[in-house]
Image (tube, rainbow, N blue to C red; front, side):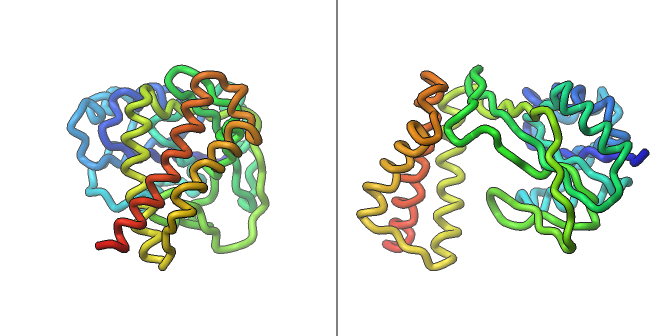
Length: 250
């Protein structure tokens, strides 16, 4: 049986971290928490459990995750966010990975998001297929936002049964704050890559974004919170374009 290291990066995750740790205790042979000097009770909560807690300055999402992976004692790593919880079905699938992994595959998980108390099953949010388990020597994280894994050799893709529960946003205000933050980062990246904004894109791109998510991606079936998710996603698209426009003005 392979041993599995679960790695988590944190910053002020006292609301989430305990549920995350509890959900992986039965399948993780090692839990590493790389914390960027939280000022809440994150550290105290982690110290209640069998966790290796390490404090280190923030290196960005990719840099911090790569550092956390390098600290793992085992080659097979499970990268999980502090606001995620492993379902019972997924727990069994991961245990099967430990029993059968031959070192020639990476493992993809379906993530479902809980938004303000509602599970979002459409809006382009589900199934959110993400790579979370692999041999740490076979690849590393790349990118500033929406970081992605890049592998250094061909590997088989294996989809695991069971969902990863993502408790992303407890309030609409929290979602809007995150949108404001990441739209600025995205705009700077577009500016760096030489992309430009136009009035047509500012006016029509958010509109079509909403139509696609709400009607084509069936956000309408997720009720009130589905409408909010689609509306906020369109607003995010709008913010990226106008912030890019402002960068060129400066």
